[in-house]
Image (cartoon, rainbow, N blue to C red; front, top):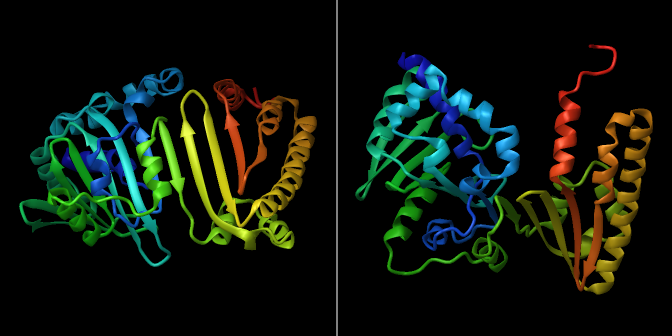
Length: 339
């Protein structure tokens, strides 16, 4: 019985460990817990998502059915945890680094820490995930080894209170968060862009990345060949900084912002991006001509745009609820000739 529960528990907990997070209008103490050097902020408002039409239409029924399976129900009952009611938000602040990932994930909700710690220590070792408990002042830190991710092989967690669960791939980052939580000195994020993004959260899901190496971010963000074109236009060398924001309300919006050296550089960047977007739209048009069922892609492509605001160039893509419905129906529909 416990052996089966272990797999179920691990996959229930795993989504909380990944660098995607949640919170709209987060409590003031959230910033105190995040690494001050954070340049990446990922937030998710679980309550808002659970009340959204997209969730109710496409996710609620199958999720409830999966949570009622014998294995899932046994795990959740043991933890005294109902993810549909007890999970409130997740916020991740991190300073991405190619050599290490220093970040802290703050999960807000309703927990029974004793139940969680006991259950994890009992269930995970037989599944090949050794667990060790260490003390830091009055807090118990749980180290879980052999985590199958590319970011880290060890995960550290600690319950700050019955309303706060902290997770990190770095034991030092987690200890520092605990120390800040009891400090009388208010801790603030040093990066004003990320700090402002945390203070102004309103969406179901938000992702902000302030990149101090813009050419690296552009190479990762944009499609193959695009970076080469922008470099040829001498635009990448004039990027002062960049941010990425993903918001999900009724619609899904991705915004990439490049702050250029000056307004002339912003106009130059926009011209280069416009040429790339035209090529993307032409390619999509050819695909739709070949397969008319993909017509929804034309509507999505039509909303791809780039605009200039002073020294900033904003590239935006938007997926509406109607687009999502059309894509869902398209994927659910059998391919012609296979019925």
